[in-house]
Length: 506
Image (cartoon, rainbow, N blue to C red; front, side, top):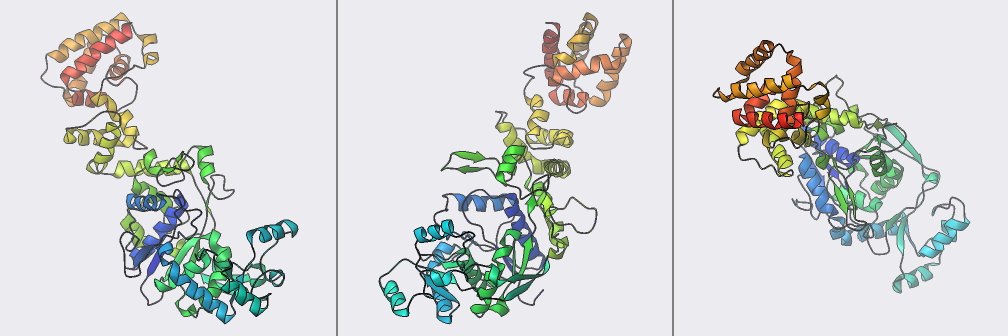
């Protein structure tokens, strides 16, 4: 840690859905910032206008809001280093690119896309760099008067970094330790495109410097870009202000072979996006964890454990606990395998631990989608407490609660019919008469009364308890049957027994 204020950033491109790996990057940045009383910045890297997707920025903001990871500074929240969209900062990047050219660390390249494609086809493993730059159309290979003429004529061109020969570039990664690169293996990356927009390489360095970013945590897929960024920090005279870096491990497929992708989720039947994403261009809807029925607390909890642990056996963490316990040095170097069954376990645990009042709005939404509109919140809170331990995903609340508000649409007759007989039918007809004579169903009184009546009729309790449950619920699941009857009330219980008798006897 340095003495300067901790400032971290998440800098996504608005090109589509937000992968769970991206949310984990947000989470680790957020935890680090909050632990060290710092700032979390959201910066939109929309310099590639060809890949920009309408609505993607709003989607990213909505995802972070759902997760409870809202930034201190962003395009919406503002901040002293605004603007926070790179497209709105376009004018300032050329100044730094031109400075690099003047210093001899970068150059103008006038090659057309067609010329570069021709080289890629004709030259195996072609890279625009030390091996070929002198034979291409750029300010290093062309006479100065020709370069000036091309620039004066407004000839389309890019600015590329000039990678030095035979150098070793090193830095300390907070997760991986000492990391080194050989410059001969890195091509001359484009810094400024022909449309005046910077590439990621230039923009990330300039913006991190101007926004005083102290720590940069990003996915390990960005490691190959590190030598370019290290050189830019050095060439621009900002090396002393360079953030400390940490390259986070990949989230892997369940079998551990390769990075988890949207295609893997579709193939294996689970989401990889935080929230559902609709691509207006393709008409494709990709499902998200929120819509599947995950609580945001559970989603964050599972992401935190993908590549990090606090050194104990603890698995369930609140956000405040994560802030307290988080350390970037305890993030693993190796990739973390994604286990959807474990993800569901986290959600089930969070549902169990959540207060019924907290779950209430989620459950009301689930029931409203099934045309069950609740007016008695207190009754629903009582019912949530009764069945929440049986729910894994939020939609499970409909299966576990729906029968409290609507009578069964069908019955699990296969569990009843083979052993159904007139004796059982007569038992329930008489039981209806007994219920009619009580004021209200009280579980602690009605259960022993029901068992005593069964014994009086010479019947085993198991022979009548299962049919009773199926009459009330339609199937064999649910909490204690007398708790169900008490919640339904005497008259509704009588009604359901009556209708069940008809169905069982048909």
